[in-house]
Image (cartoon, rainbow, N blue to C red):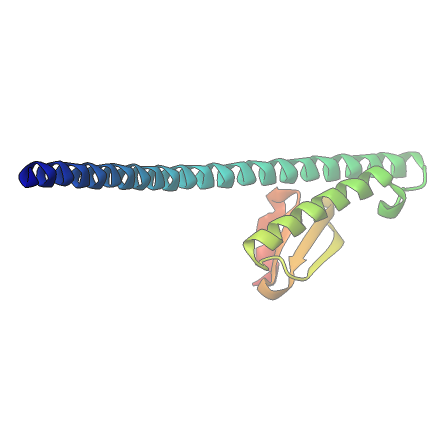
Length: 155
């Protein structure tokens, strides 16, 4: 009778232990799967942010280029030029881009600290918009093709 009780008790404890091991194994495999999914999601988020930044860069380049052409046509016809502050569409677009950059800055650190926007007129290139980022002395030119010029000037 005692041996029967002992073997039954041993079987119960073994089954409990086996269930705990199975549960722990399932938990470990779930944790590993979640970690893998997080890595994949992180990569996809980086790709999405990169694509969004490329889209913003292209939109800004196109908008600035079109605005420059419009200002050149207005000047050639003798129509007074519209300033950046008087153009609500251009001001709204710049505000949206500035908000996007603030979000990116808050999530990636202060890589874009003090930003200063200026307009530069060069021979052969009209109205390049420069963004200067204070601590790094790095600037981006719009259109992007002129970025090299900025680095040469700073050097």
